[in-house]
Amino acid sequence: MIRYLRMEWLKYRKSRLLYLLLLLFFLLLYSLSNSLLSASLNINVVEGYVETLRNFPDLWFSVAAWSNYLLFFLFSFWTVQIISSEFRQKTLRQSVISGLKRQEFFLMKLAHLMVISIVFTLAYLLVASILAGKFEARFSEAWPSGLEWFFRHFLLAMIYGAMAMLVATWVKSAGLSFIGFLSYFAVERLLRSIIGFVVGDVLDGFEFWPSAICNQLAPNFLMRFGEGIAENYGLGGLWTTQTAFLSGSILLLLLLAGLYQSLMRRDL
Amino acid sequence: MEQVLITQKLSRNFGKLTAVDQLDLEIPKGSVYGILGPNGSGKTTTLGMITGILRPSSGSFEWFGDPRKHFQKNLGAILETPNFYDKLNALENLKIIQHIKQNYTDDLGALLKKVQLYDRRRSNFTSYSLGMKQRLAIAAALIGQPEVIIFDEPTNGLDPQGIADIRQLIGDIAATGITVIMASHMLAEVEKLCSHVAILKSGQLLYSGTVEEISGKDRMVVLSADDNQKLSEFLSSQGLAEEIRPHESGLLVQLAGEISLSELNRRLVLEGHAIHRLQEQSFNLESHFIKTISQ
Image (spheres, rainbow over the protein chains, first blue to last red):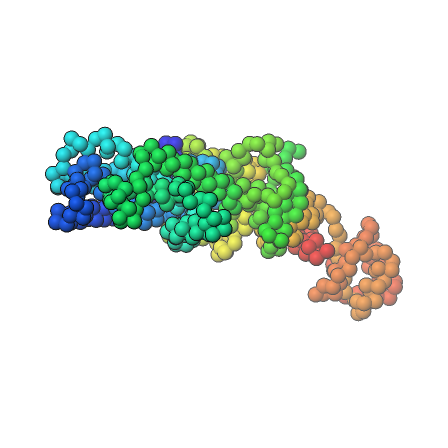
């Protein structure tokens, strides 16, 4: 694994795009979360609950909700890029004829994905900590819930990354791959409607769609305040941590298996 | 003779198109093996399959006598335009190849000197000319002392100096005993460098053998007379020619049997043909190639 990471580091250490995306993620996450928490000082969005948004453990929620969007748009852009560029510039082809096994390529990108998921998750933790300092949150309450949120964020980043990589192995153009990835949730909604139309209400009780899993890993902060309030805002109930982790892990494994199969079969 | 590569009924389809059709090849160790064919004959697809970047539709191939061996570690290959990481320089790109091959013993500076890229070792790949890219690809192929190096159209798009440089490099590599497999439609290139050739057309193998076998195979003469039509009929009726084709100077005749040129001349004159030209055609891969693919 260290060898794969060294190779990836050699390839991307000079990439301005990576540093730019990370900086953008950090700044936008701070700005958006700060705006929410500052606004909540004046506007009591949910009676009796708003002040908790600025303190742990709810502060993790507040920041993660924004991070979910940013991971979807920024982080996935990078993961599309690292696969698409290898196909588009034919560097994967060159690597394979130089002796790289396709399995090694998969492991190399998996290692890359894990490391940048950790880096983006650390950025999330840092933003939450800075905001906690600004709003004088009680740091004594930050842990162990912080550990749970580290894993939630990490898992979500891995899922978005794996999903984006999978799409990038199917579509040669990075731009089209990214659009394909972004439109996934619309496609999923359409698919659910079609399934409902064709086979009736068989899947009505089924909750574990990829979009639902992603939203449960870093949920909208309103979902923290119970089903009654969440439903008023058109949101479903919050899953238990175990359910979110288990369903997220299964989805991630399925995506990685799909990515592996796609890489094994594709002509270069 | 020991074979480095054996293909058996190797085929590849792209939809309804059969790019390579049941190809059987045996490539001897230490040879310089040319794969010839017009554009679209399946040369690149064949090389793609034997290097692992394309999956065969059917058939199999075996490198170094072991079908399960991770053969790429013992290969170096330059397929079409070399593709390295744009933003990295020559040294960084070669370091990645070293990691891939897990072979860190080569002196990258010496390799770059060998391919005359040392002075540009810190320039980004994107700033290289095509000839420089090809030379970097050769340096990459040489990492880890491979047993076989594969070239696909190595001089395509190069200027005359670039062509001469690459030919020199290929010649130097072949002289070290490394097996070289080279696909090309540049006949002069193959003729100058190769010990063996295979000729493909529409994905099918039309001929394979040594260059010496080809040279000894056909005896060709250029003949012209006052009446070439009558001359052609006489040669056919007397069983003196295996094949007669039009030629810019008259007729190109593949002689049958062991008849000498003086004997042929005597018989033609006795028959009343006014001969303007009777010239033995020296061996030429081009003529053999054209004849093979036009069959």
